[in-house]
Image 1 (cartoon, rainbow, N blue to C red):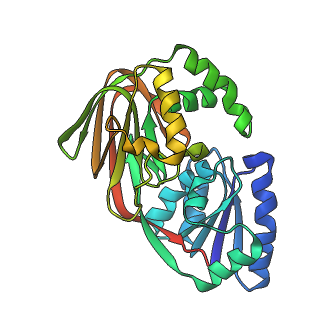
Image 2 (image 1 turned 90 degrees about the horizontal axis):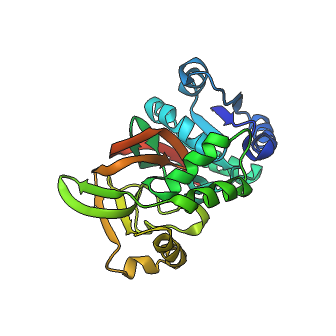
Length: 291
C-alpha cells in the first residue's frame, strides 16, 4: 500500500515528526511504500494534492488544524485519512479512538477498514469537527494574530483575558433549513462531531454520519453568562436548560447585528462578517477505522 504521511513540523514543538518516524519505519518494514511530506505554506495544489492523490491512505501527524488542511484533499481524492494525534486538543483522533503508537497503527492499516463521515463547510472552508461564532471565535482570531510558532494551552491564556475584558455577545439571527431558529444575543456552535476543546462538548448529540450538522445556541448577555454555561457544559447540564436551543440541519444561515468572526476546528478563517452559511457535505470523507 502506498501511504502518504503528512506532518506539521512545528506541531507540539516537533512532536508530530517524532511520533510519525517510528510509525513510518514500521510500515516500511512491513512492505508498505511510505512517502513523508511536511506541511507547507505553498498552495496545496503544488505539494499536497500530488502526494495524496497518488496514495491509498494518508496519515496526518499534527493537530486538528493539520487534519483540516489535509481533509479536503483526501475527500476530493477519495483517499482514507488517519489522524496521528500530536497537537493541543486532537479532537478528531479522539472522536474516533485513532491510535498513535506504531503497533496499533499498523494493525489498523493491515485491517484496512474504512468509515465514511460527513464534513461541514463555511465561507469556502471545510471543517471536520465544528465551527462557531462568539467568544471562542474571537479568541481563536486573537491567538492567530499573535502566533509566531507552535501553540500550547498557555498560548490561549492572554488572548482569552484580553478578549473577555471588552467582549459583548452579538445578536444572531439563525435560520436552519429555512426555518427560524433563534434571534437574540449569544454564541453559536455548529458541530459535526461531539467533541469540543477542554471537554466542554456543547453538541453532545452530534452524529458525523447523519447527513446533518448540530446547531447549539447559548444565549448570553455578557461574559458572565458564558462563564455560567462553561460550568454546565462539561457534564452536559446545559442541555436541560430550556434557554439553550438545539437543532439539526443541512444548512445553517446566520445574520449578525455587527461584524463577527468565525472559527472552524480551532482555526481562524476569513475576516469580520455579518453573514455566514454553514453547510453539510454528507459522506464526504473516508477515515481509517481503529483496530
